[in-house]
Length: 277
Image (tube, rainbow, N blue to C red):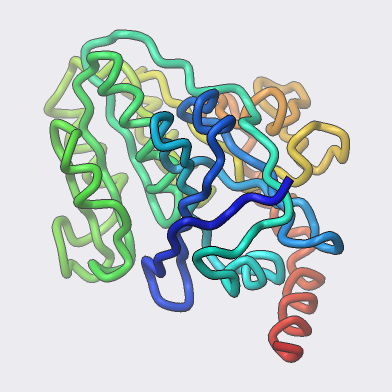
């Protein structure tokens, strides 16, 4: 069933796009950590996108995506009032949220948008939430104002020092963990190297660490097997058993190898699409 685009905004011109979709059934049932699978048209591939926010009353869901391949480039050509062929969801296991003393949510890149929904869920549960977000520079930071509207604290790291701490989110995280011994959990959503680094920082502190492996998902229902990952030495399927797992148990080396397996083919497909556009 076609889904109408109600709002479109380029968060970073030519790179990152926000869409608000008219999807009342998904909005009513979705929870932090859930994702949807969409197809732009009948010949398009199935693409998983994590839900960045939802408004059950208005019947809308918000998606944020990075234009990195043919399908996301095609999706970015659609405008307000146009339809996406179909959107399936909510899928995946929602984030496990329970009352606790303090949570730190770490986000990088478009992962900040997915982390936004998770942070909102923790605040709704009555938890004290600090968020740490990072980017190469202040122009590439996402959702800073939105997070500041409900989180107890927003900490920023930029590579060039144009805003907040000059350096990595992991440096800010380590300093925070050293100063605050009451942190119950760290949640990290973003590039795989960032999530791996977060897990390495939290391990000595013995803090529960949750990471989202949504980057490796493809069909969203566990049939294609592309989302296989190793967690606690066992093969797991990110789209149906996750996408969130214990960051201290994920085999990140294997994950990074598998994510880059078809990069040449993906680039070739993207280049051909841009030539035709």
